Structure formats: structure tokens, C-alpha cells
Amino acid sequence: MKNNIIGFKLGVVIMSVFVIVLLFLGIVIDRMFSSFYYKEMQTETNELASHFTVMAESKDTTSEQMMRTFAEFSNVSIFNISRDRSVSFHSGLHNSDDRSFIHAADLERIFSGNSVSFLYKDPGGNRYFVTGQPIKAGQTISSALYVMSSTASMEQSIDSVRVILLLSGMGALVLALGITWIIARVLSRPLVQMQKATRKIAAGELETRLTISSNDEIGFLAAAINDLAIDLQRYRDTRQEFLANISHELRTPITYLQGYAKVVKGELYETDEEKNLYLDIIDQEAHRIQHLVDDLFELAKMEEGKIPLHLEDVDLKPIVEHAARKLELTAKEKGLSITVSYSGQAVEVRGDRKRMEQIVMNLLENAVRYTDEGEINVQLNSTPDAVLFIVEDTGIGIPEDELPYIFDRFYRVEKSRSRQYGGTGLGLSIVKKLIELLGGSIRITSTYGVGTRCEVRFPKHS
Ligand code: ADP
Image (cartoon, rainbow, N blue to C red):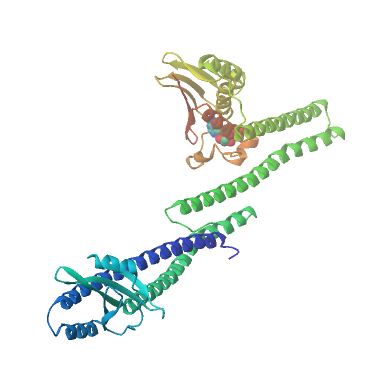
């Protein structure tokens, strides 16, 4: 019961409704039967009285004997009563001395030509239907004929109907109790299961799953709980992976920092150039940590949806030109050329200027970083409903099986690349999130060893 309170409540409600309905039905059926039997008997007694009256009024000498036989046969008592209340004729089992059923008012009515009909209870507690009718002798009323019919057999019939009603009511109640118990269990069992499952999930057992698959609100709730558990599990796993990645990413530059700082501090170098080289490495690694922390902070803000966007109409052309110019020197040092081309009319979209600069810069930086020879081709194409920003390079490319993961946090193609080319493995995940925040989309295609193509689509809003 402790775990099945809702089942108990439900059971009480269903049973109460059932008992009320049964009681109501029982009373109605009992009333219907009683009034039916009463009416039947009243009609029967009235008809008998009419027959007896006809017999009493006939001049036939055998009529009295006939009346006696008929009364005996019909199991009724008859009284022929004169105006002075004396009994001139009596037949039947009812005591002839009992006159308490005769009332002056009734006699008055009968002697004025009417008939009376009523229910009478004798001093012994027996009940009768009584009908009184006038007996005519020519034009005058000579006496009153009372017919008394006992209600005992009718009451017996009503009693047996009541017993049947009571028994079937009790049967229905037992059946209802069984059905209620089953319904309560069927309804409450999944709720109890869900309660236990959510408690387990809250206690950290995130592998817990519910197997309820009904196609109703309970099934939907169970599916929602399962989804919640899956999300929590994924969140826990990615958080653990995330923390492991961060500590790993930080450990490498910190090891460099510690190592080279020790060398410089202990003056374990031979020339000043060597010392400067070590100091340069320390500077680079400090920047690397700074970059990583910035990226992480940015990503965390984005994931919490806390990045404020300053929307305006942004012309992408100067942004792309500025980024290309900025990277020209690095590209030249590597022997690369950057070409920028435009097609279409206006290249203005609604967006956040700073974020767009960040996206363009990041993709161009990647192209320069992962290309050793050849060229970087940047295009800005305006279509009726969007502006496409495309960066194509002739770099090292990305193997096809790794393409699906390049937007994951800390994912780097071939781990050895990271040291060689620098980078945190967070750039593309930040870029993708920013593009999505601005309502756009990104698609990267690549051929390993040949080159990579990044295509960003910024929708033009009306
Ligand atoms: P990183 O900061 O390490 O560049 P990104 O998230 O920007 O991280 O990129 C993820 C990985 O995708 C990189 O490690 C790199 O190997 C690969 N990548 C990204 N852009 C290019 C490109 N233009 N050519 C080849 N590989 C690329």
C-alpha cells in the first residue's frame, strides 16, 4: 500500500461510485417491483369485488354458496355489511369479529354508490387490500360488500425479489472489487516503476531505463524519462571527456613552460640565442594556454546560450577582404597565395559583425594552417535568399572517415598534426555553433591529400 497510494485512492473512488450506483439501482428496481405488485393486486382485488357484487346482486338462491366457494378458491375474505354495520354474510379466513377496517366515511361513500379501496393492517399485524362496493337491490343500495385480500403472498414475492437483488448486488460488488483492484494495479504499476526509476536516476544510476511502451500519456512520460536519462548520461560522459581533454590540453604547454623556465632559470643554455629561443617557446606556450582558455570560455558561454548577438545588416565583403589581408603575410611566408572573388549583387546579411569576422577568420586561418603549398581560394556568392562564403584550399585535407567528427570539441584529425600545426581542436566547434546561432549552416568537404572546401551559408532575411 505504501507504494500504491494512487491505486488505493483510485480504488476508493471507483468503489464509492460503484456502491452509489448499485444502491440507487437497487432502490429503483425495488420500488418498481413493489409498485407493480401492489397495482396488480389492487386491480385483482377490485375485479374480484366486482364479481362478488354481481353474485350478491343476483336473485339466485345458490349465489351465497357460490360466493363462499369462490372466496375460498380465491383465498379472500368477504363481508356483506348492512348500513347499521352488522355483518349479514361472511366468508374467508379473516376473523368476522374484526370490524376495524370499516369506517363510517367509507360506508357513507359506498351507500352513496361509490366504491372504496385501501390498504389495511389488522390488529395482528397482517396486511390486506380491501375493496368495498355497493350491492344494489333494484334502485336502492341494500348493503356494502367488502373483499379482503391478504398481501402475504405478494410480500413474499417482493421479499424474494429483494433477496435476488441483494445477492446480485453483492456479486456485482465483489466483481467490482476485483476489477477495481486490477485497474488500480494496471494504472499504478507503471507510475510506481517510474517513481523507482527516477529515484535511481537521481541517485546517479543513469543507465536506468523504463520498458513501458504503452501508446498513451503514461507511455509518453516513460519515454520522456528515458530521454532525460539518456541526455543526462551523455552530458555526464561528455563532461568527463571534456575535463579529461582540458587537463590533457593544458598539461602539454605547462610541461613546456616548466621545462624551459627551469632551463633559463638554471642558466642551462650556452648562447644568448639559445636562451632567446627558450624564452620564445615559453611565450608561445603561454599564448597557447591563453588561446585555449579563451576558446573554452567562448564555447561554455555559447553552450549556455549566453552569447549576446548584436544584429545589424552586415556587408561580408570588407570582412573577407580584411581577413585575407591579415593572413597574407603568414600565407606568403609559407609560399601560399590567397585569392578572393565575388559573384552576385549585394553580399549583405543580417548578423553580428564581430561573430562573422570570427567565423571568416577562423576558417581562413585553418586553410592557411593546414596548407603547405598551392593556393587558398575565397569566394563570396550572393544568391536570392542567401550569401555563400566559400574557402577552398590545396592543403593536406581530411580523411573521409574523420569528416563527421571535425565539429566535435577537441577533435583533431591525426593527433600528431596538433603539435605540428598548433590549434586547440575547438575552432570548428565554435564556428559551427556561431553559424547556427546566426541562423546559417556550414558544410565541409575534403579529399585527403588534395584539399578542403568549407561552405558557409548565411540566409538573407527579409
Ligand atoms: P584546430 O584549432 O586544431 O584547428 P579545428 O576545430 O579548427 O581545430 O579543426 C579540427 C580539425 O580539423 C583540425 O585538427 C584539423 O586537423 C582539421 N582541419 C580543419 N580545417 C582544415 C583544413 N582546412 N584542412 C585540413 N584539415 C583541417
